[in-house]
Image (cartoon, rainbow, N blue to C red; front, side, top):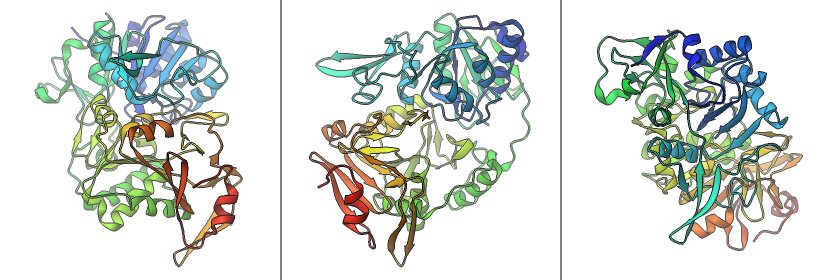
Length: 502
């Protein structure tokens, strides 16, 4: 039977050495007060310590002094396993200082492994991750010098086919953020941007004899409608009520609290960007790339669009009228709306459906998308792409590996060079005014997020759209299939490449 507790009382349920699984998505739906109560307890008593923190999509608030950052920094954590680290500002730095073990696995593979654990199965099989960095024959999932756990990812063969087997530590504690708890302890997510892996995490924790701690905004007397009770009360040990300040209409637009027709999407994007202080960076380079990439869209396509430069694809899809003829999706489980970006990435404006994250990755892993648009840090002569780790810094693979693993058409949107690139466009002609000092096309990528060889084996069409030209992946390497008006083929492309193209 659940109990109503304060944050400090609830975190007393966490023991030294526990594996704590957090149901957050990058910067959204974090049970902030629970994390901060853990910090206060650790600061005062030195416990809980030796924790393993696990999260499909990572957790943070883009603020190094809030959420879990403080107790991670103070030494309460011995191991961290996440799909994405982008919103965890100080933690990312500490990982590279070898302060604790840290592992990066594809977001969808963590989600599926949690669901497997909930069903009493030790791990999850997947073809996602073969031939990229997480493959034990490549680098493996460890991010720093002390991360050598070989149990997380193994190569196995089933019926003559090769898979990766993802096995997570047993979850002892579930940390969840929900909207409301009714008098039976049932948890609803009505005012949340997503439910993520919430149910699977709770089921796994209970199957392992652990505890489920849920932070909610309010208690309600009327029982939640059965289909809206994401977590049944019988799985809950502690409910912590932390009344939230009103979100305001901008953020409420992301919860599905009221209907938003497609014609109003632009207006709400502007409102949310203004509220979150995350103005989209408009540039000639991004506009050229987004406009060209958007031409790959076809009516009735099911689509995933990555953050950064790929976001401009939706801008030009709207201008062409194609946006109303396709279905956009986001990794957290949203389908049929318009993905938000910045601090609220993972939420959707006008979503038609928001379901469990593991179900979204069922769609992605099995080729349910028609096309995806992704960014990239590096591309090499084999068509491999590095999108998760730069020199001395990393964000993590997130859902990138799952999204690109089987999607029939993969469009990479990236500039030809970086740092200092300046481009002008006039009367349909592109002029490279100043070249960037960091090349994006290299002989060998420093880490593989996407395998060109496996894509060819899968029969995927892969193109690389830049601000000056377009390449396509072939079995003989990259083929230059388009040079934009105003661009000098030899000077602006061929002489800048460290490898020959067809």
